[in-house]
Amino acid sequence: MAAEQNTAQDAPTELDALVIGAGFAGMYTLHRLRDKLGLSVQVCEAGSDVGGTWYWNRYPGARCDSESAYYMFTDHLSKEILQEWTWSERYAAQPEILSYLRFVADRMDLRRDIRFDTRVTSAWFDEAAARWVVTTDRGERFAARFLITGVGCLSKPFKPKLPGLENFSGECCHTAEWPRGGIDFSGKRVAVIGTGATAVQVVPEIAPDAAHLYVFQRTPSHDLPGRNFPLDEAAAAQIKGRYDEIWSTARNSFGGFPVPNPQTSALEVSDEERRRRYDAAWEKGGLGFGFGTFGDLLLSKEANDTAVAYFAERIHEIVDDPQVADRLTPKYPFFTKRPPLEHGYYEAFNRANVTLVDVRETPIEAITAAGIRTSDDDFPVDVIILATGFDAMTGTLFDIDIRGRQGLPLKDKWADGPRTYLGLTTAGFPNLFMISGPQSPSVLTNMPVSIEQHVEWIADCIAYLNGQGIDSIEPTP
Ligand code: NAP
Image (tube, rainbow, N blue to C red; front, side):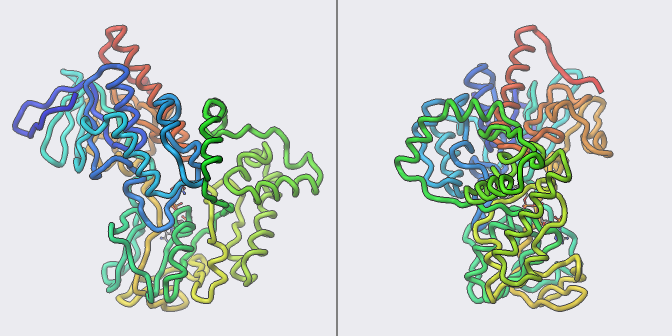
């Protein structure tokens, strides 16, 4: 049931549940609570459409590192939609994922309970009424028994405090705030700061257009070959016939990916056999190099060293200049930072118009009107792209003034770091549920599968409370 328009002067609109965010998490929550439990639910979404991450991140090259065959709502949402929707590539690009989420929103009739262009500014728990009083930047107020956050783990852009950035006379843009009309790089000198999953996607897209591209690297990442390809009709049909198996494997796996957990140690096989497995995973492309080769890459440093050495060798094969290859080679254990998938990232450094600048060797000292100054040189540029990631996990939650019992702000409660029960709830904040919140496995997993697991836990919990006539729930410290 959609809430009527309500402003600050009126009594707040009563709801069973208020959900923040209309990405995968908020959309599925709306469906479970409204369509399965019959609750009154209002979703508030800051963007103008559904999609969350896939609404905001529209930089060139944005694409998912989970294969499209399993980066979608599972059969728990709808078996029909699995058959109705057809992916066009092994890894879907951002516009296609956004189209998919829009399709689901229409197909499940979700939009009527989502208020777009509406940012939740505060949510205070009224102890006497046992209600969350929620206000928005449009002046609306809601009183909801349950408050559920689906705000994403990586939704508040992180912009480092680079001295002098305000003086830069060119264009500066964070990858998560890409202008709708795009950026024309032709003939321009461009700087990309950061070398995480986003930079690894954006660099090969900008390199062919820019007059010169400077990539400012602090820490190299272990970039696995993605090996994307189009899915023809036969491949798409084959995937559609395997969904029962895909979801049951995914739900029983380590990270929500439909791959069996390997049991073999990297140290118990011969050098030739280890090499054969790494080569096969490398040629196949994707995250299987980490998830599907050996069972002890994250348990034994010695086992992990074999993967690190393999990486060094492959990077040196692709990158022509051995010094550049060395700078691009991580010296820390594989899989201890999220390995991005790359499509032409390493090759980009073989272009005459691409330069790698190692800011550990020569730190950025200032941004000038004309460009970037390191301890060693001046790099005049027309555009600076901040591929510097996000204020992860807590950033977006702290931007909302959330207060629990006795008016305690969540920010103060978590001043020394978040404390939660399974990343879902936190003591002193009754009936507040967080989907893939801090301390949950979150982005270390295939998100749609773990989001569904959280939402189902929350929906089951609410159904239990209602069935038992219990007003509220919260964990003990
Ligand atoms: P990120 O992984 O946090 O990378 C940020 C980069 O900026 C790092 O290389 C970081 O260096 C660098 N950086 C930050 N501050 C800096 C400074 N002051 N000077 C120089 N460098 C600086 O962010 P991201 O690439 O946006 O990716 C975040 C997450 O989003 C990924 O892990 C993934 O979960 C998700 N993602 C997924 C996809 C996909 O599925 N295809 C694509 C993009 C993002 P340090 O490493 O030294 O801190």
